[in-house]
Amino acid sequence: MRKLHFGLFENAQANDTGRATWRHPDNERDQYDTLDYWLKVAKVAEEGGLDFLFLADAWGWAEVDGVRPDVASIEGLDLPRLDPFIVASAILAHTDKLGVVMTGSTLLEQPYAFARRMATLDQLSKGRVGWNIVTTGTADTAVKAFGVPMVAHDERYRMADDFVEVVYKLWEGAWEPDALTKDKQGNFADPAKVHQIHHDGPYFRSEGYGNSAYSPQGTPVLFQAGASPSGRAFGGKHGECMFVGGGSVEQLAEHSRAIRAAAVESGRDADSVRVMAEFRCVIGETREDAQRRYQEVLDSQTPEVTVASYAWFTGLDLSSYDPATPMTDLHTELSQSQVSRFAGKTVGDVLKDWHEHGAGSKAFVGTAEDVADRIIELAEGADLDGFLLAPVIQPGSTIDFVEQVLPILRERGALGESVGATLRERLVGADEATIPENHPAAAHRARVASAV
Image 1 (cartoon, helix red, strand yellow):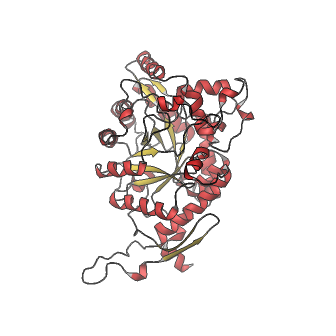
Image 2 (cartoon, one colour):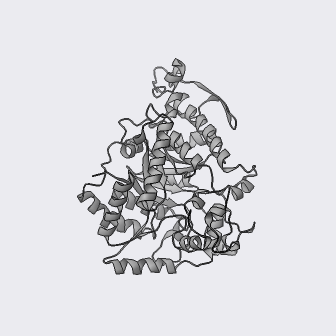
Image 3 (cartoon, one colour):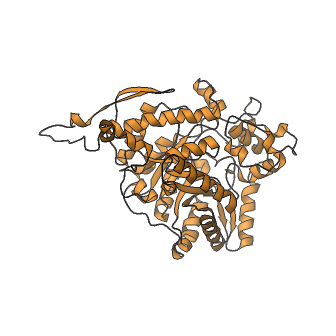
């Protein structure tokens, strides 16, 4: 039986990805801007046995033909939101085992400052953090806010490749793991183990000393979710955990094969990448009860939010196209994942689907046994290593899953054992907290670089 790991997918805003269900009476997401909400969610996740909490993020906002529709504000679709790094620091301070994965943009962050922020959280949490590497799918409005030029989709991945080279040098090469001696009779740090880094790339430059010493993991656990050819190639080279959307066994199996093939093409082992799929579930005592509960969620969302939400991710105003238009006729420089996933569908199909699911997958609706069956079916049939629960209602959906489904998976021998203090040891199954030698980050370690 395949041993699976689970994370919790969250957003530091009032709605989940692409939908607006905050009006549901049992949904507490409208309290996203309170510490109490996040500590409650973190407690449920940690005590329930989930490995990590994944904080999605996006810069930018919804626009349709250059105008932000009123419905986006009325429904809290895209704004306001909180900084996931600050949310993470609060969660890490109140948990002992739970990992926290933060989303950071290689288009809009500066690598030197970003490297210090991640190293700080890794240090203070004793190695419980991960980085979801994004090139910013909502880049058209984000670049306006930051006052920087727009960068085309594939070029953003070339830019990301340059970005990660800088942070790898800072995390792995600037300070050796034992550079800090803190010897009050001698040195605080051994100068022979503190090194300058030099980077003169096509997009970023950095020269000098790293601002933070070596943290417990060195490089945090690296997540990536690109589904385009460029995204898969980038993920195969750099990702340790690849996050894919939902779909059928056949669709997910194709994603898994492509990701593992990209890893091999980059000189890594196929199983060095953990493939994790997003899923949602609505659990009832009976299938009819579950369907009733799910319909209540759908009824809480207004139809007007659908067009604005899809435009936020893709820049495409679907209301301006004939409903019979094939999605393959449309093109965008924004999130191509949210266009390619609908290959074979029409604009009308997507409007209906997006209203129900947003950027996420179709929910598993049924009893706890039904949900466990579906998870095992997908994992075995699509070569998956785990799943990210995207709660339909929070915290109710998470509570239902950890209290009703996880015990079934554990009884069936499908739940992976989390061993080790750091997120990498617990999630990736590594023998050490630091990134393995076959990963490109390891080439920048001081002892390796000096030998070369």
